[in-house]
Image 1 (cartoon, rainbow, N blue to C red):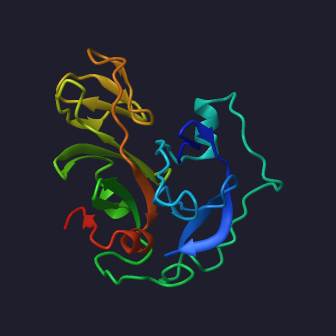
Image 2 (cartoon, rainbow, N blue to C red):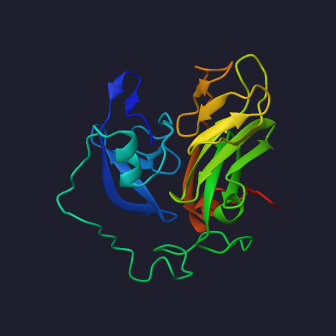
Image 3 (cartoon, rainbow, N blue to C red):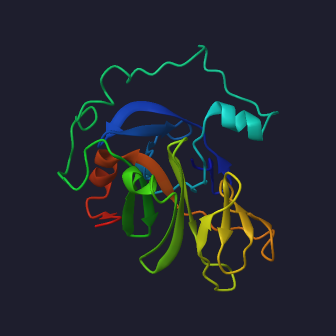
Length: 232
């Protein structure tokens, strides 16, 4: 998810129908520039090189979302029920997307889901197979202490920096209640979906979300051929 404001100007986006390395390409209606969904960056046109501001988001079920936010509004796309045009064989096949892979990397199965994280010039992938057994994973990448918070039922993850504004580095574990974390240093309780401390001495403090996405391995490694892979 990205913010649409660029230098004080609101942009609107649509689907171009194009793919770059199997990843969706957007266009903006103001300049017709093309933007990579994964990079959040314009790759052609007047806005080429411009980056959108990353906004942290959480993939979840409709039932879970309604339980947390019962007054929420939802976008109705003109049809009812569940419809997935890729359900007929796409997910079960080993094929690398629609147009095939750009780089070969056999460290994971082609369609293994990963949580991919970008830290400047360094990229790392956290496979779902590892996160299933470590749903709260403390790590240090490119000298950045981070925590990956994974929800197996929702098949998604969020990534936060573990360093507070005063320089303290926290270590997290799953809290006693669903969607909560506890830090070992102060025992404060945190909302996993917002990175906000809700109880304890750090109540009101927010963790900094780091740019991440849930993606197939083939899509991630084609954009980040030098990616690190957690556990290897």
